[in-house]
Length: 189
View 1 (cartoon, rainbow, N blue to C red):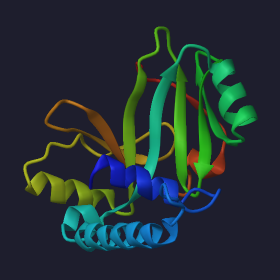
View 2: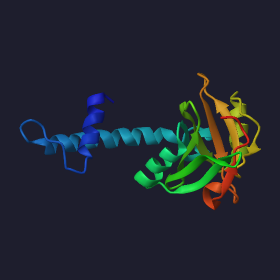
View 3: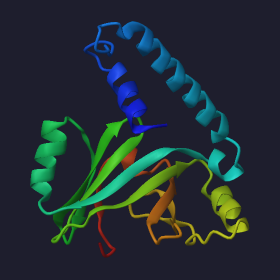
View 4: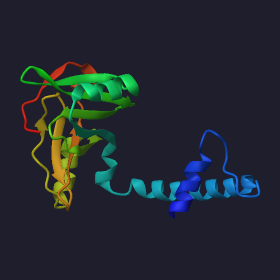
């Protein structure tokens, strides 16, 4: 899909109304763009559930980032954007991070670190971490052993071919994402 089509599709969906071309006859063009967009969406979604490993992923669970000042991050994400705090991370008894609920069961994990490195990883959720690890391992993908994280969530870690780390996790009844509390940081950032 070309950049201009992506822009046009995004612009078409803008709450201010439909896109208009130079002579003001944008209605026909808008319908054509929506048709192309909807056709492309069906094409992509039609391929989504073909791989058994991919079917085990239920959603993007969280994105993790590091910031210079956790209080400034709280002021922005909680007070500015309205993301509620699901739970906090403590480091040696002091506030070291916050887990913000951003919608549904998706979160933003924010840690204070100086210097901050920005986005550190993303996490995908599964309902069956054992089956995911077995399926990935059968395809030659290296996963860390399943471990219960300090926040009460089962997790495994992987790296893509360029070395980007990411996490797969499975919630439990004790997961702090839904129970709240304070998680003591016992690992190095």
